Amino acid sequence: MKITRREFMVLTGATLASVALPLGGAAAESWRVPVLLYHDISNQYGDPYTISPSLFAAQMEWLYANGYRAVPVREAAAVKGNNERVVVITFDDGYATFIDYAYPLFRQYGFHSTIAVIGSHVGTFIKRDGRRAVLSWDEYRYLTADGLVEVACHTYDLHVFNRMKNASAAEVESDLGRFQQTVEKELGKRSRILAWPYGIYNRERIEAARRAGFTEILTSNEGYWGPSSRPDEIPRLNIGNRLDLISFNQYLGGK
Image (cartoon, rainbow, N blue to C red):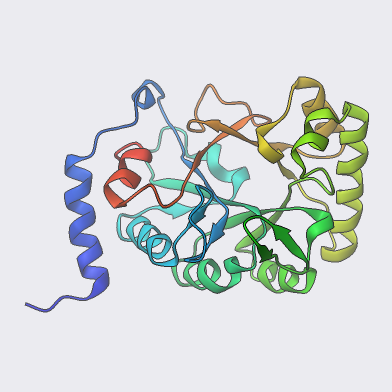
């Protein structure tokens, strides 16, 4: 019997859903939305923040075949108790591989996604196990044209661990303000969403971010967006090559 790849994903997805167990503690929430965190998509690197193109494609196909909608950050809380299968898909850093491997799939499936941009790195490289190209402003203009991609802030120039760790709240606010000025100049509007580099933040920095105009703030804290979550401290699930499709389903709560 011959079946298509999509039919195979549907069949295996149904099997996975029947055997997977929720992540510990997830059932305590009356509603929950997985906010997925990706970085780079590549076969060249093996770090925890990189996923292979084939596994990424399989995960997106699995979501689509199992009836998930990928929605903007601002819409995630609206699902509440309606039992709809919803995820939020986020990318940190803005690697150029997004336009090669992620965006074509998102257009095919109608998936929304959010890219947290390092303002000072746009159109250059990130030095992580080599020189990894990042997207340019021209590419962001192309990606945001159809409304499926939203640009978020990953700071303007604080994506260095010691610099981020030691920055004062005033320095953070100044940096975020510079990002807002830049993104407004390049894309025509300011950003609503911030993702903290390295997950480093405190309440003082959150207040600085709110003064800079950010209303949804993404963390690196492990967990789901649910009734106990704050919009300025949204938890996420870090995704990488460590998750095959069975583990991926379990990580999403076994829904």
